Length: 120
Image (cartoon, rainbow, N blue to C red; front, side, top):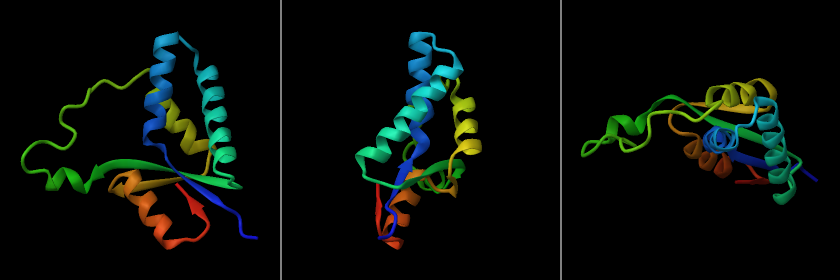
């Protein structure tokens, strides 16, 4: 039987873990443990053999099509604690796919339509 692959939109992970670290004054090592636990839970809950984490790049086509208001213009500018470190850690230690010109969730959806035995 073919391996089942969980497709993970990884853009929210550094926010979630970063805010937990901020609120609870956790060191980076504990944040990594939380990340590993989160990914293990996803793998178990989706009955997957492996996963791919999709991360958005800097460019996004939606910025060019947002004419009435800036795309995501109302969002907080400041990133939570360890935001960039968590992204870097994921890139260096897990199977990640970097999306350029779109957002991670866009490519997750496209990927699932192109490949069998995947779950979002």
